[in-house]
Image (cartoon, rainbow, N blue to C red; front, side, top):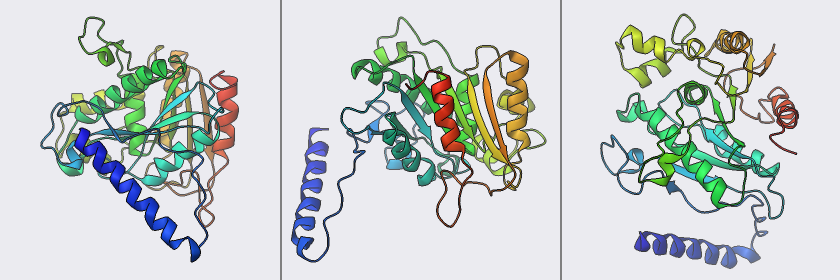
Length: 305
C-alpha cells in the first residue's frame, strides 16, 4: 500500500510539472474548489467478499469529495451512479458529488461491482451496505453528523439506493471490524428516475444484469422494492419524467404509494418533459428543477441548515 501511495504521489507531481511547463502557452486551470479528500478508498482492506479477481472491476471503492474549507454543514451523501448494472454513469456520480460539495454536503461516489463483469445480487447490495457503514464511520471520524447520512441513486443506481433503503440492518455490535458495527440504514434516500420494480414496469436490462436470465420468482419479488417498504424505510425524495421511455414513471409512483401506505415521509416530483438519464442536466439537455427542490427538502428535513 505504501508503494502504491508513493506512486500516486509521483503521478500527481508529474502532472503538476506538466502544467507549469505549459503555463506560458495557456491559462492555468482554476483550482478545483471541491477537491478529493483522498482516494479512491477500498471498501475492504483485503479482497472484497465474492471477488472474482483483483483487477479494478473486482475492487469496489469510494471516491470522496469535500466542501470548500469552512463550508461543510455536517451532512453526508453516498452517491450510487446508474448504468443498468452494466456501467457507471459519471454525470450521476462525480457530477452529483460536486453539486453536493458546492452546497456544503460531503459526498462519496461508490464504484460498485457490475453484472457486466459477472457479478450478481447480493454483491451490489453488499458493496452499497459496506459503503454506507464506512461513510457513517468517516462522519464520526471527521466531526460530521453520523445521523445525517443519505443515499442518492439514479436509474439502476436508484434501484440499488432503494434496495439499501428497504434491505438494511442495524450492524453487528460484536464484530471485530468496527465498520461492521455501523448501521447500513440511510437517514434519507433520493431516487432519480429510479428502477424500482422488477414486475410489469421493470427495466429488463437492469434486472438481467443484477439477477441473471431466469431468476426465481421469490427473488424478483424480494428486489421489487415497492413491495418491501415498511415504516422503517427512510424519508425519500423521488423524481421522474412522464416522457421517460427507458424506466417508466410508474416505478416512482409505486414506491411513493408504498411510502404513503407505510407512513414514510416522501416528496414526489413528476415532470411532463425530459428523457431518461438527465442527471443535473446540460445546456443541450436541460433537466427539470429537481435539484433546487431537493435543497429545499433538505432544509425541510433539517438535513442541512
